[in-house]
Image 1 (cartoon, one colour):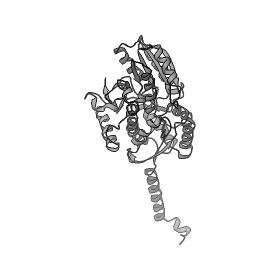
Image 2 (cartoon, rainbow, N blue to C red):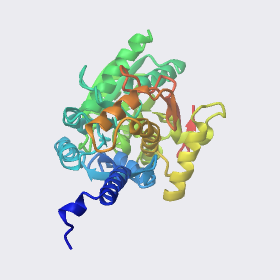
Image 3 (tube, rainbow, N blue to C red):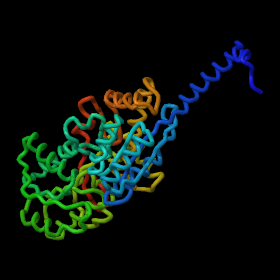
Image 4 (spheres, one colour):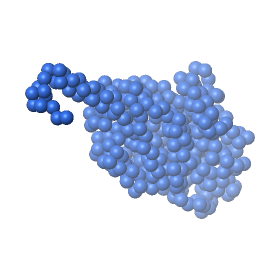
Amino acid sequence: MTPSKKSLHSPTLLKTLVAAAALWAVSGAAMADITVGVSLSLTGPASGLGIPIGNQIKLWPTSIAGEKLKVILLDDATDPTKGVQNAKRFVSEDKVDIVMGSVATPVAVAMADTVAEAATPHFMLSPAVLPAGKDNWAFRLPQSNAVMSHAVLEHMTKLGVKTVGFLGYTDAYGESWLKDFQAEAAAMKLPIKVIATERFARSDTAVTGQALKLVAANPDAMLIVASGSGAAMPHKAVVERGFKGKIYQTHAAASRDLMRVGGKDVEGAYVVSGPAVIADQLPDSHPSKKIALDFVAKYEKAYGANSRNQFAGHGYDAMLVLEKIVPMALKKAKPGTPEFRAALKEATETMGRTVVSHGVLNYTKDNHWGFTTETGVILKVVNGDWKVE
């Protein structure tokens, strides 16, 4: 039955329509999902990093601050082109509030322009270095290479290391480690010099020639810059070529894959890591101990004893950051809007000191790296297990 024109103007009907509209508006706001687009290397050379973070994301809560959390997880196959495709989909089709990824530095760097142009917060899951002025929307969840270089250099100094051979990826991760390591040594005024430098591609299956040149240079220590299970191959190569000095690995190698693939050849290796990996070995006074133990307990309950690793810890910390910044942003705007994305960025820059499993974050408008030099710990491989130095 169609109401008459007169009935449409009745006070009772008008009140009903207004109430219904108000109810629709309120329910519409309550139903606005917070959408996060995550691009991970679930296949390809960096899959050993991406899969643990993907596993951790499966443990995330389904809501934050009373709003439903929607996660769109895509594989970038450790391919910068695929990462850019994922980023374009996130910002143009899915209209996400936040982009996360990638774990592979070259992929994360490639994604950055697309995400920034869409004025969307970008939480990188690798220590990706961007040109000055290009990281206005980008925040890093892993520790910077400079921060981790600081811990490595302090340990090398303690052991009397003066000369270093470098064997690292040809890509952005390898090059930024070399640059930051040398710059940090200079800033700390240490007499530690890189005397030989060799590189290799992530897809390479052997580095025999590079290892021979580095062993011939006879440095006090080797710094290997690789990731996941792929870090074992260059390590084994220098050991098999007769190197007897100290061997260091970066935080991208802080995984049991290093020991699983490297076997006896990685015994005695030094690996810089965030504290999440060795939560039970932290002193009670360490700010991250309680949170790191919670990460380990929940992750290993889901995936088995000793499954913890550096990368899953970043996935855990990502949720801690979201749980802090989302309520702040909700006070200013609704999810799914440009205003909400801007509010998330502002909240991240002003959230203050935030303890996570990997240390203490304190992003600011001028610092989108977060972690300070206190975060890095040196682990030693002893009898196929981690031991804090």
